[in-house]
Amino acid sequence: MKYSVENMNIALAHDWITSVAGAERVMLDLSEVYPKAPIYTSVREKSKTAIFDKKDVRTSFLQRYKLARKKREVLVPLIYFAFENMDLSKFDLVISSTTGGAKALILKPETTHICYCHTPPRYLWYPRLDPRSSSGSFKFLRKWTKKWLKEWDLASSKRPDHYIANSKNVQARIKDIYGRDSKVIYPPVDVKKFNPKKIEKPKDYFLFVSRLVGYKRCDLVVDAFNKLGLPLKVIGNGPEKKNLIKKANKNIEFLGFVSDEEMVKYYQETKAFIFAAEEDFGIVPVEAMAAGRPVIAYGAGGALETVKEGVSGTFFKKQNADSLVKAVKSFDADKYDSKEIIKYAKQFSKERFKREFAKHVESIVLKNK
Image 1 (tube, rainbow, N blue to C red):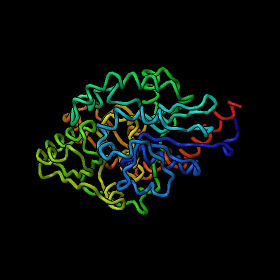
Image 2 (tube, rainbow, N blue to C red; image 1 turned 90 degrees about the vertical axis):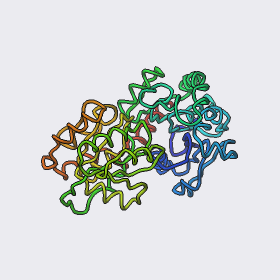
Image 3 (cartoon, helix red, strand yellow; image 1 turned 135 degrees about the horizontal axis):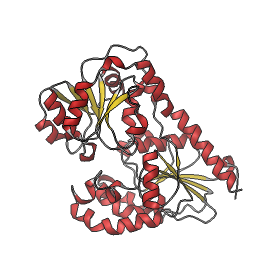
């Protein structure tokens, strides 16, 4: 065994690369910490993940099947099997980034496996937060596979040697479901990207940015702003979009996909950012804070670790429209200092993540000596 990280053969693993969301950006930053490490994944949808083109991405046998690349509903029951059948025998250190399958890798006893866990699968263990295991397309497949997927997930949870959680919220879940201890390292946020060159007076609209899927509680936000009648801009696409547009009043504007430059502009100009989900961590509120804008968040999950009451935002206590309406009505934008919010958001930077992660991995390797 080679006990210097610099001299080790290192591999990275990620569940799937079919879009570029928060988990994929974590993997991109990990690939910068370990630039020589190949990235093993079940499938990659190249047309939507061009940012990975220069990376050494190695896919499983599932890559041959278009349906697996296009439909996660079909992919999920196969993902543990895909990772179990990958050959990573030549590596000394494997770092997996996962909500499920990537931790299922079967490695040599002398290989160190460190798992960065975004959460145990919500659709298996927390259906209140994510009901997709019993709803949506391929519902019959989801219900049929749920029982043995839970067994498979538990079995694979024993394989990593060490766990890193992306929040205290997820740390508690890892302990509760897997019975494993973990170190908390908050995920990276590109806070510099959102910092305004000059802080302008915000415009008179609220902002909501999300994939438009049920557990993000887009419906709650639309219901609340229908009652409020205040301007709301919604950025994002997803299966709920058509229904949300139908129920929304004229004060709510759906912008769909926007460029990075437009996104930064909307963050910097909004009166406040609305966050209604109970997330594992939640990157978008931090992006809004990095732009100097306060957040009105549902007071549960990762938001309790990222939003500081009275400094970078405020909370609504119940996950319903009336509670959000009350919070918006009592919200006073003038009490927040944009410079202080930006300063607060810096603790979640990419640089901090890379530094903490590399240091922790080094400490694990040295202990194995």
